Length: 81
Image 1 (cartoon, rainbow, N blue to C red):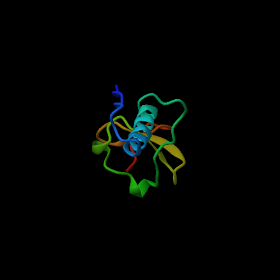
Image 2 (cartoon, one colour; image 1 turned 120 degrees about the horizontal axis):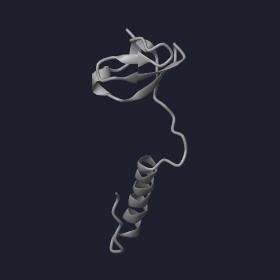
Image 3 (cartoon, rainbow, N blue to C red; image 1 turned 135 degrees about the vertical axis):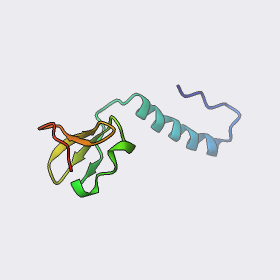
Image 4 (cartoon, rainbow, N blue to C red; image 1 turned 90 degrees about the vertical axis):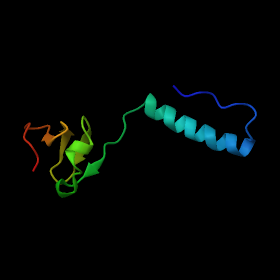
């Protein structure tokens, strides 16, 4: 949970901190669907670096998720190589 921004902070800094606060709050509790990272198959990052993450593989026109070892196609369940 994000803490409050104190009243003693200068106004110029307060405005910047509030914009960061609002942006982070939107990530913590999204109010709408968020866009997925889109990448071509050849540009997929290592699945081990992004466990339990979704991507849109744009050249295959599919969603894929990382099981921590491989990227898995959501349409067939096959490993993307």
